[in-house]
Image (tube, rainbow, N blue to C red):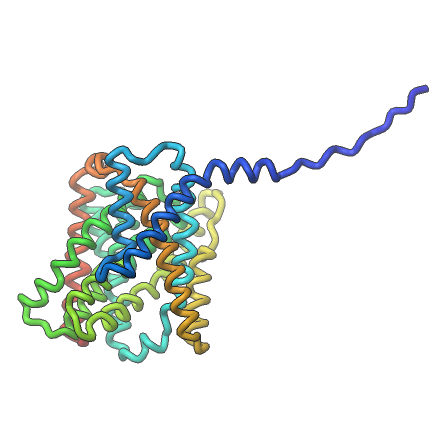
Length: 344
């Protein structure tokens, strides 16, 4: 009688799958990282060059000139998310609660008011204009908190579509870039002193990199003050993301769908590094190294996000979305100016 023997199933190796994944995402990720490193190097040689803004402008130009091969798409999609979230985490180490408190409670209160009122007003105007709710929310957070990083911070919480995210990022770049020459010119026309103009810039301009550009144009000690006020707005990313996640969890409980985490892990990482910087003396060399890594990571993500922006698609979104972006910029700038006149 033949004896039947049962052979154990052979374990499935995950190595080939991992290699296949690397082959798929590797080219796009490598290109984004290489360009980011090159731009970061150029920024050290060219005063005033923002690698983040240069990266997203280069990405948009390359995409709309047809210079982005389709085989790079999977890697660019990864580059637009993972480095951005890690960069947001590292951004926390640049922010000390003590530095914010040293400004007095007027400036942190101004930052909080700009974020809360800016988001509420943008959502309200978006409703009046008929802009889809998620699109209006992404624009509201990007324009009121910290630009593309804020868009990335909330898009996964609200389950935004890719086109909605890319549209919000493109509008942040467009209108925030317009504010770089506008704020110094308007500050001079209004007769604002450097301190008041710096507070206005930090409370109004969308991206941290754009605030740096405005602060540099204002000169003197305006740069440090403008960036500190801006970082007070960045600090609002964690509570805003937590509130939106809480609302999403309530909605998911009501319809039985999968509940998102209360706070995204990268936002928790951001908050943890803020706590570390606030509680411990971090050596200057460590801060410089982290700042350099953060710049490369965010520049990588900005390039990848830029390659996803199709101008024809942005135009197809209609004048209502552009009108909302303009209105949000005006609201945030108005709130920032009024607050700067009161507290600076």
